[in-house]
Length: 289
Image (cartoon, rainbow, N blue to C red):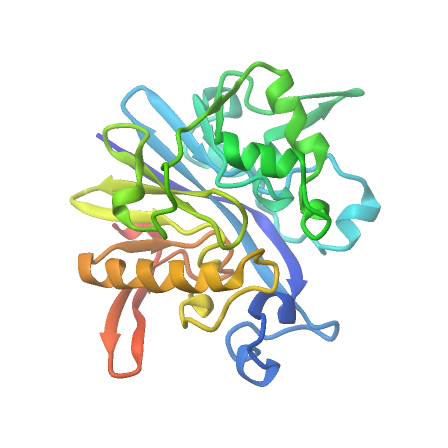
């Protein structure tokens, strides 16, 4: 029987204007109040999937191998780590069989590699790491605007370890429709989104007769559900807009549960259709399912 666990890895801060794009501060500050430096707190919430003989971790947080200067930009706080969160459910990093990396920005994959003495090695020594060939190339040959988010020390050692495998991608961009999903296992499919970064992967999970979608950076929080609320970090904001619109229509029609990686308060939500568009129906923790 499949089991799902929310894996908290701590909190960090990012500029509120960057996180909400063209939306005025007078509006977005009601959703996530900023501090005196205009920084908002965000979660780095991963997902653990126990599925028969596999223990699958989706994303790995920011990690701890960067220097003090790097971390000073992001104001890490909170007591949670991957190790603590795994141990809460009786697991260790060595138990992980698979790591699905939605994309290779540092706050999603930094915990994949750790520093042992002067050597960078996989933090999950028994796991297969899953990316896709298109995104891997995008991350290892980054454009000037995005390259600060792709840190070589987080990425290249995965391939050098021999533990990296690629998931197939759709032949054509499906604009994040279910028809474009790729099977990962009997209960898990992978959807692809191209607005935030090239070929970001969103796991979609069949669980207790329901469907849960790990939103990664397509919808970082419930505050990003309204269509115009698109991050300034997104490489192709109009593509994000179309992907959000298509996904939200599908999600409300099929009663999907959305699992949020960056929402500092809400783990999950369901949706409803209203006269003013698609909005949150209810929020809840994953453990209540």
